[in-house]
Image (cartoon, rainbow, N blue to C red; front, side):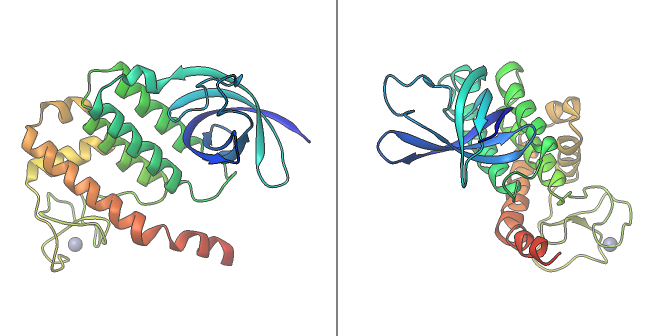
Length: 244
Ligand SMILES: [Zn+2]
């Protein structure tokens, strides 16, 4: 069995048998990896709490026939304990972990940009005074972009005409001009569209100077955009890659 080292964020854990867990990881080198941690649910486990969700760990793994096995784990950053009992941070972080797991479609396909985005967003939640909700929105837009679903907020998503435009359509990929507009689109305020562009670009001066109502409207549009792509877009990806 080959041994390898990697660093990772723990995304999720599931019970396995009496004392083990399956740990879903987003690793720096190998993308999403599911690995077995043996004896981790015993109080005497040598892994302690190092393999709990949110933890940034340095790992040694042994290649297995189906799942790899964690043989060593060293904590690099215990993000969960640093979030403390802050419900908003914890909730935002949980959505990040779930989204990262779903946007990285294949196990062991390198996904370095997704890994760096996730580490950066968890650090921003713990180390900066930024609103967890805005950090989450920015992470989601960037993570979707890396996955191939970059939204457009300035030019029309259909014809490319420069805005500002007033109609937002998750299905079309962002803003639509008055000619391309389809029924059932949302009509966010001009200020909200500016916030969306700033969240995607990481322009925090613009995000933080925006009014609460525009930030909240941006949050609801990001959620709609994410939901549309998670429900409809991503399902087709494994199918497409099998045909290629
Ligand atoms: Zn157009």
